[in-house]
Image (cartoon, protein in one colour):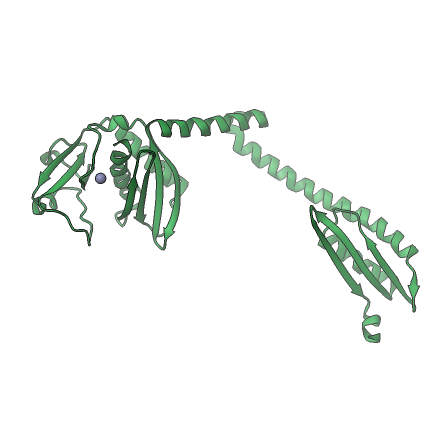
Length: 278
Ligand SMILES: [Zn+2]
């Protein structure tokens, strides 16, 4: 009942926040969640999701009445705020579920009004709390929102809150400083990576100079074949190969190295004179 009544409020909030193009394209309500599919051709932004949650929870806090009446279909279709779904067959008379008004004559356009045969809470306050747990695209132009209510919703928020507290303790800052703190750390990592690259490049130059000095000569060409220290990158090795070619004039070079766990790279190169010789 919590999940079903919340689904009606979600349907209304989606239209209010995303626009009147939003049409229900299917829903699944069970004891653990509500899953709602609707027409919308782009992802719902984080701000929009927050606003949708806020609007549903506002109705929860206001503890609105939920009432059902059975009306002739023609009369029901004229109720303010009602949205008939094209292609849907409705029974006549039809059962109308209203949130925020106890009778049809008290309805206005801000109320949720749906043709529905399902079971509902008597008041929205019993939803307890509403929390969207995910949104995804399910087909072209169709999005899906999954949400929870009551204790699962409270548990969800408590879990997320605990994660934030733990992260704040790890990063030794206040929860509201986390974003800035992580941003600073990301910048530091980037700067360190650049420094490391430079240092590895410099160290590699020394290693390659020694390799050139001790390389055997075959037919007037230096043969420089070696495994380079780990941590070299494709870019730094290429720079070194160019240096070998330039320093030796005539050379055959093969460098192998590992950039990380489980992968190995190999570059082979020859100077143009050897290419000409075939
Ligand atoms: Zn319903």
